[in-house]
Image (cartoon, rainbow, N blue to C red; front, side):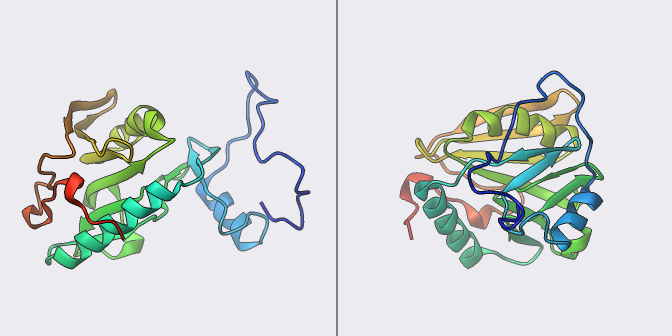
Amino acid sequence: MNSLLRPAEVSRTTQAAEGLARRCWSLAEIEAMVAAGIIDEDDRFELIGGEVVPMSPKGSGHESYKASLLDFWISRRTSGYRIIQETTFRLDAFTFLEPDFVFYDSKVKVPQLATSNTLLAVEVADSSLSYDKGRKARIYANFGVKTLWVIDVETLDTHVFAAPGMNGYQSTSVIGANEILAPDFAPELAIKLAELPLI
């Protein structure tokens, strides 16, 4: 939140209304508050079903692997798809997530990015691992994101989720750090995460 409007000693989160109805925010309202300076552009949160959910702080391992993956993927990318990092991924009028990476059809402009033209979403997880594999994966599945990867920074295992449905992903598997990890639409991006040179 805007530091001029909010004293530093006031907590950024609360559970005071636990069990009570909460006010539902829309994506348009959140964007208007950012434009008005009420919410700082650098605040890290997601909007899930109208509720503002703070995101975990990023650790140095998270940032190092994310930068290294981007460098590796961009250097090998071919036409047909694009990669965007930390975008506001709008799922409907009351929900947006901020995946670490989204791979999408190259014919699509960023403002038209949607689940229908998304090829793969990637979450690089450290402290958020259980959330990313659980609740967040169900959200991606409910909105029809075809494939989700959750990369565990500690073990470098990749949890692969596919075949989305209203009850979550129907197919889940784990690719180990020494196994080949590659999107089905881009074999040129194949890598063993244990061999990824860190930036």
